[in-house]
Structure formats: structure tokens, C-alpha cells
Image (tube, rainbow, N blue to C red; front, side):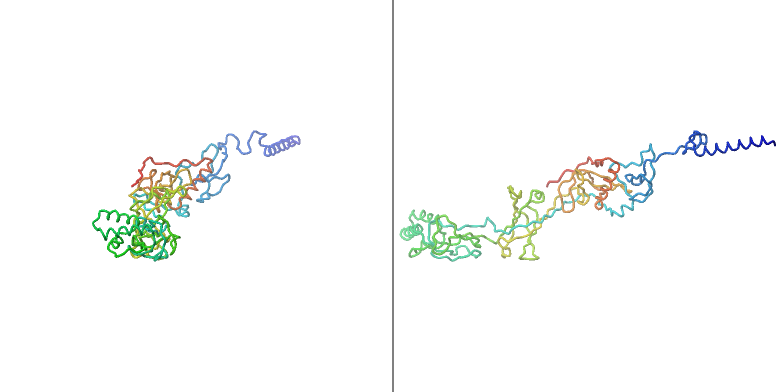
Length: 427
């Protein structure tokens, strides 16, 4: 081979090597993409990832690969042009592992009597219908006093005091004269009636009609058997009393009243047949049971309460006047549709419960509730008998749903509500 031919071959080889080196460093110069193979090789173009999302819990999203913070599954990529995994409106789905951690428990919506117990504090008082005042019918001077303090037990006809009254003395003398001189006189009846109006009992008038003389003083007798509950501050020996002034107040403690205040919200649980169990500190372990006898229809304007009365037998005088007592008011209404109180959430504008749909799915359901019982609410609408509602873990499920909607950038959907309505029981 000639020297000139050899030189030409070397020159061509060097040029080809330089061109290949430049093409490797500057591919776009040759019309190729750094991330794409050359046209004609059949490979698809690469897609851009928008975010990563949990298939089981769609509200769990991330801008980088990882695992779901709830179930631990790998986050799936969602590419541009894809919507990703969507949630099902008011239904939230949780895996078995999450339900186990939360400790979800459910209970059946049932129809049963609604029981409610009120715990109240009141006062033991004497029966007002058996309460009597003993007053002075004329101006008088107290010559002698037999009852000096309250709390004394007295019997009807027992002397309480001796008084001197000129008006009373004159009336007694007039009657005595008629009764002894002319027992059949038509003036005798008016004279007897005058003594009654001056406060004398029929037994005293009968004795006066047959007595030999009229004494200067007059005895004041108890007009009722009972306990002296009050005495006037002016009732002392040697003191003077005016006509109409109260001397003593006598109460009958054989029947006592237990009186307590009830708020407006407690009225549905109170009827005249509602049972009341009463306890007093002076008799530990003993319970007095009696129904409600009267509910005052007049409310106190300041406290918005009404007085409720219970009548108790107290023949043995175990209950003390004006002592404090506590009571349990036990009310039970006719059967109604009931949902456990622990199932109802008040996290939204209206009460919400979560219904177990099976397979880890729970539906948010708006309910309308009525009366409140000890452990259940009366359901007016939104549920049906036999529905399974979450009673434990409902608040955590609700929190998961709130997080889901927040992660999606939209407010929570309004929970569904059943059209079926149950009329409230008011009896």
C-alpha cells in the first residue's frame, strides 16, 4: 500500500472517532433526547408522577414514595391525567388492623322503654294541709304559759296558755248567766256562737254552761294534735298580745312532704305516678319510697324551676322537720326506638351516628333525637330498628373521616338521613 493511501485511511478514522465523541456529549445536537431513545426503537415516553396515594386510605397522600401511616401499605403512584383513588361520600373504610387498634364496638338500635333517673336534693317539711295557727281573738294579757319552746308534742284540747281578756270575760259571764238562769232561752244560741268567734272550743263552752262560777282567766287550748313548729316572739308570761296575733303554729308530723326543685328539662320524666326513693342522713341505709303527688305548674322566674311534692308516712316520727334529703326519681316511659348515648356524636350541626356497613365500612348518618334516658336517646328519625351503630370508637372514626375530607381539600359531605320518621312518645 502506498504511503498516501495509508495517510488517508488514518485521517478518516480520526474524524469518525471525534464525531462519535461529540455526539455522546451533545445528543441534542444530533436531534435526540437525553431521556428518550432514538425514534424508531418502539419504547413509550415516560409519564410524570403527580403524587403517591394509599389505595386503602385515599386521604393519605405524599409527594414521595412511602407507606400508609394507617395500614402500612406502600403508597401507589398517581400520574398526571389520573384522578387517583376516591372516597365513597359518607362511607369511610378502615382495615382490620385499624379497627383492632381503635377498639370499635357496635350495638343494635332497639325498641324498648326509655328509663331515666334524676338525682335531686330537697327538704322534708310538714304537710301544709295539716298545719294550724292558734291566734288571739281579742286583746289579752298572758297570765301563764305552758309551752315555752317549739318542738313540743301537744294533743287537741291541751292547755297552752292562760290569758286575761276583758272582752272574753264579759262574753263568758253573759253566756253563763243565760245557761244557768234560762237554759231554754233563744238568746243562748247567739251567746254560744259569740264565744266560738272569740276562740273558745265547744268543750270549753259546755264546761262553762255547767260551772258554778266564771273564772277571771281563760285557757287557750290546742286546736289540733301535733307538734308546735312556731311560737310568736311576744308570747311570754306577762306579755300582751293584740287581737289577730299568732300565738302558736302546730304541724302534724304523721304525714310529711318531701319537696324538691325540678328544672324544665326534667319535666318529661316527672308524672304524678313517678316513683321517688328518698334517703336522709339521720337514717343511713333506709329508703322511703313514694310516688310524686303534685307538680307545681308555676315556675320560679329566677331559677326556672318548679316545686315537686312527695307525701311520706311518718307515724313513727323518724323523719325530722326541715331536714335535708336526697332522692332518686326513677322514670320509665313506654317503648320507643332507642340508640345508645355513646353512639351519638355532636361534632357537627346535627347529631351523627356511624352505621356499620360491614367489611370495615362505616356510614355517617344524621339522626333526630328526642328525650334523653340514662343510657339511650329516643330516636325520632334517621335510624330503624336493627341498625348496627358504633358505640365505642365512633369519635376516632369521625376524626378519620374529617382528616380524609381535609386531605382532599373539600369539606365533609353532609351525612345521609333516613326519611323514615318515628313519632315521639309523649305518654
